Amino acid sequence: MRRIIVFLVFLVFLFLVNVIFYFVSDDYKFFLKKIKNNDEIVYIDDTEINDSIGNQFQDPNITIVEYDLVDEIKDEDITTTFITKQPEKILWKNYQKILDIFTKYSLKPIELTNNLFDLTWEYPDSYYEYYSKDLTLYFFDTKKYNEVYDVFDILTYDSPFTVNKIDNFWNSSFYINLNEDIQDNYIRLVINYKWVVFGLKIKKSEYNIIKEHLLRLEQ
Image (tube, rainbow, N blue to C red; front, side, top):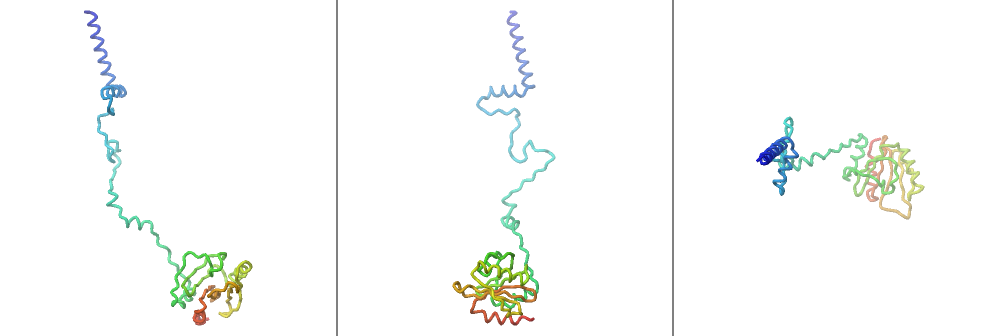
C-alpha cells in the first residue's frame, strides 16, 4: 500500500513539474506540441500569421499607406519624368543674319558634328553645323579668322586639299581646294564677316546664286 501511495505522489509531482515547465519555458511548450503534432508546423503563439503590409508586427507609430500601382502611376507620368527639355540655342545677331540669307535652303542644325567639310575629323574645337543637300553652313565661334586659317593650313600637310587665300569676300576669305585626283561636286570656303567666322560647303550648281546672297550682306 505504501508503494502505491509513493508512486501516486511521484506521478503528481511529475505532472506539476510538466505544468510549470509548460508555462515557463517556450522551448518545452514547443517540444510538447511537436510531439503531439509531429507532421505539422508548430507555432509557439496561437496568433494567426498575416503576411500583409499591416500585420501584427507593424509599429503602431508608423502609418502605412497602400497604393494601387496600376491605377496611380500612369504611363505618361513615367515618360514625362525622364524627358528634359534641351536648352534653346540663341545666336548672336550677326550669326542669325547670315542664316537668314540662306532661308530658301531650309538649313537644319546638326547636333553631332564630326567630319568638317566632309574632309577632316581633326578640327580641334567645337562648331555649329547647318545642313541641306545643296549647302552646308559652319560657324566657328571659338577661334578668330586667322586662327581658323592656320588650322587648315597645318592640316594640308596630311590631308588631300590645299588652302587658297583669295579674299574676294570682305577682304577675308579663303578656299579649301581638293587635290585634282579626288574632285567632287562642291566648293568649300571660309569667310570672316564682322567678326563672325563661317564656312560654306556649296554645291557647284548653286555657287553663283549663293555668291550673290553673300555680296548683299551690308559692309
